Amino acid sequence: MATFVLCDGAFGGAWAWREVEKELIKQGHVVFSLTLTGLGDRNHLLTPDINLETHITDVVNTILFEDLNNIYLVGHSYGGGVIIGAADQLLNRISKLIFFDALILEDTQSINDLYSESFVKQTKEIVQSKGEGFRLPKPDSGPIYNTDHPFKTFEQKIKLMNKAELRQIPRAFINCTKKSSHPVLEPINQFAEKAKQKNGNTLKFPPDIMRIGKNRLN
Image (cartoon, rainbow, N blue to C red; front, side):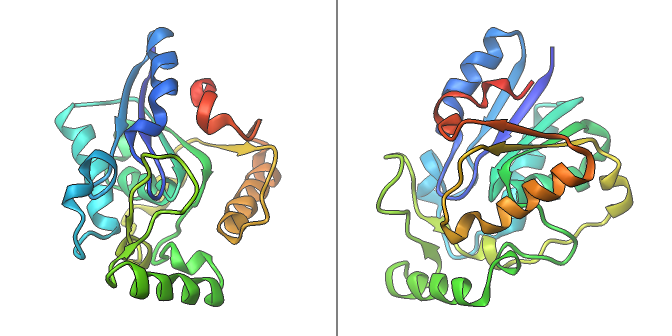
């Protein structure tokens, strides 16, 4: 039996892991699916003050208050940056980091640093014109439970205090087999390729894995 803590990406929430959670529990695992502050059923808490550290603290506090250990910490997309920050603070509680088509931050990097200047500029213009200057509107197409995302989480640079120890935690990268040309996925594709070249610890699943199949994380 393992303990899974699941962190979704931008616009998402615990609801995105519903089927995965059912399957993992059926297999005897303990599962905590998180909704980060300002998202999902916590969208009423969305304010201009929410940043990356807020979301890292969401994960850290869940682990501490639930007194979890030997954790498989899973992050999807933007959630990859969040779980890196949480693991940095809770090194002895994490058994494995699992990046599910996820972004991976290094010390002093922000999510925006992973993207081109033109893409970031375009995104900022949308935030200013349609998101009151602090929220990135949810995509027009996508799951009905998506909600607007606090943009400051993309701008804040992460501060990692235990870089050497963090690198010692085992990692896996789960990569969907079909890719869109959308620029959001460009750095994610690069991280998947790096993981494959480094140690081959990259798992491939069909593109509808977000709907049916994160259940093979174990």
